[in-house]
Image (tube, rainbow, N blue to C red; front, side, top):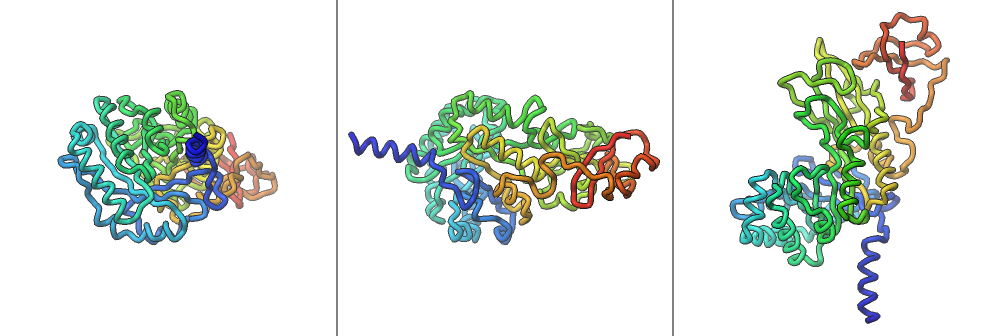
Length: 403
């Protein structure tokens, strides 16, 4: 009886005891590494902050249940880098689309073959576990999805099993509480609240301030019975830019256009980024810029937004943070500095740092255009059209100015 109690206690401690990487503030710091990112991108990752790297991905051939892309997985040098740096390695298995998931999950023989091929693929690289990314699963497959994950667990009792799960489960396909108990943890994909086809520009990952937001998604999971220690919040290392009808916040997109995604590393050099505004309601940043007569609006989870999400994770006592996607950071320190310190981010002040009247500032309009440079004290003397302007000091502090 005492021996059995020790086993149970050790299992509990394996879930709740922080086994943090280096100085990382979370038990889990998880990142997907897409197969289209050059392996050299690992040079920009901070391995002391990272606990898990999941290579993305091998896709399921749903006509048979077999895996595609295994040869690329077998030969990627990213796995060797992770192991050399003490980072646990997962393989992501993808199956996208309602019909594709039905074809796989509703046929037991295909599920069996898929599980066997997952086990074989993990052996190829001696991986620590698997991540399932099954998206747009239909509600009719709710029970079959649980069966698949349980069968996978039975086949891989000594491997970590994780699952990427939706911010909003529109089809009620995910039994979140059950899946969280079968898996080691779930990765809530806390992004794409505004997406390529959204009618207006808007935040990719609003912490609040929208009908659907990260805070509401996390609350939905916890109310469904998911233990916070089995929930990791994944955040976006990308921004979205819309072609819009005007400079107003969340302006309508131009009909016939779709938004474009940009990596975190692209954003520092984007026109208008220096004049971005932090949106208090959603906890994200946005800015406009123009090209000729065309106005573009971009919403970006910059370093300040990421830090606010890290603090939210701490407040909710979740297991950790995930990133879509490693390599999108471009080796910039802003991502890792914020995670390392959970203090003031590197490129935007966390609390308002007001600009002294005698400091020189650049004055931007809401289209992201530089309209004047002067000492702040001189601004009332210059000619400006009525409206809101952004003042940016030489060291990056930002204020709003209303004329």
